[in-house]
Image (cartoon, rainbow, N blue to C red; front, side, top):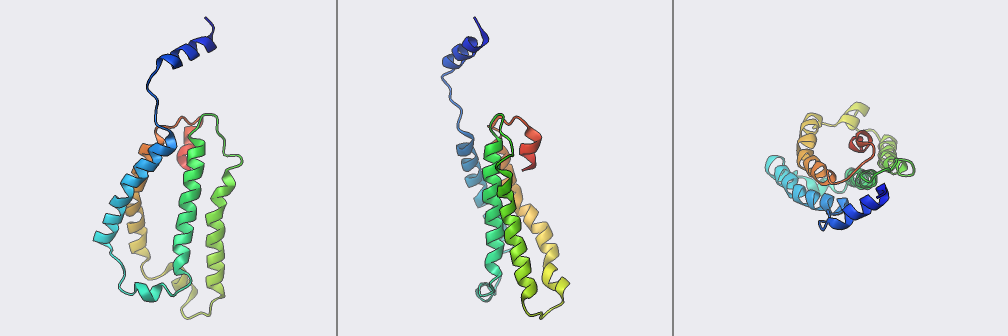
Length: 162
């Protein structure tokens, strides 16, 4: 019996079909998102002046950059979770959030200066953000790791880096 025939025979005997990686990742992220939201609302809450802040054109930029990064990272991670997949052809997707962020920073620099540049770039709540954002991301990271473990990347280090 040759190797290809042996593989086909073994595959035919296996009645168990594994879930597709995309489905497993979706379930894991849908389970993790409410945990992050619960952490956000219990620890930070919605800022009291959210209606005033929504009038700032850069308010939407935070969500645009975050969504662009999440969508591109999920797409590239799903692609890299397959055997013999390469980053070639998909790496450009990761440049979209960088471009959106660069355009936003450029737009902020063109606005009339009410505050010094470093205050405008760093903000007043930088220490809160530097601790809260990674903490709120932990359930999503755990969900992504659980969902992506069903994949079979040829280069796990590259897939894990994304």
